[in-house]
Amino acid sequence: MADQSINLLNYFHIPPTTTRRPKESETTLAECWYDYCSTPEHNSSIPIHTKIEDRMNGSEATTAYKKVPWPNGKKGFTLVELMVTIAIIAILLGVATPAMVSYMQQKGVRDAADQLAMDFQRAKMLAISRSAPCSIIFDTANNRYTISLTNQTIDLVNYRGGVTFAAPFPDPPQVTFNPQGTCFPASQLFLTNAAGSRTLGVRTSIAGGITQF
Image 1 (cartoon, rainbow, N blue to C red):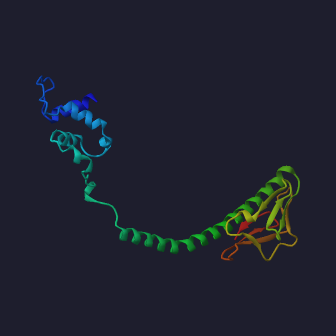
Image 2: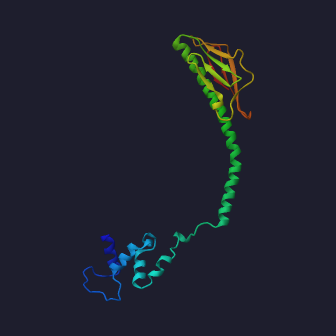
Image 3: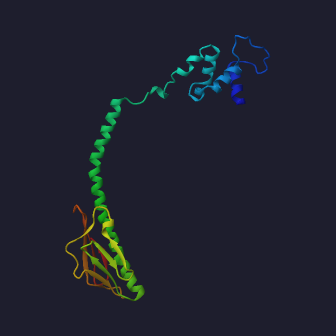
């Protein structure tokens, strides 16, 4: 507050130590400062020295109605410009949405195939570490499978795009890993999405190899 008062004194070239008493018809700098702080528009962007000059010149009634220019002379968007922008955004969304939906569907199949391959590897490690056979049992009708030693069930419906098992289905509907790391029977499973736009497979060999294709 003190710094602002000093700046005001400097602006109007009034010495801080002046002792002249103002006439009754004159408006003092202190009164201008008080009026500025007590008016509701004092937080606006109108410079304080403009307000005080108006107050001292008797034109303070028009201070609140002064227009403050926008930065760089810009005044915002017209209705036509806004409508054109909205139309361009709508066109871009119309073009990009189908491609995005297709990508998410294909990504769901990829994620499900990655998880199945990891679960095959996990069942193999469980069989070796626990010295007990570990099977993955497939429920192709309900699109899910279960790991026998952990009794954990993975549901394909949790993946985007409506992932399901695709024919041909394994027969018998399970794969068993032995404590030696071998697998019986050798099999392959296929996964697809609801649109049928992507199909991936996971294959196991008798030697215990696991590959995706």
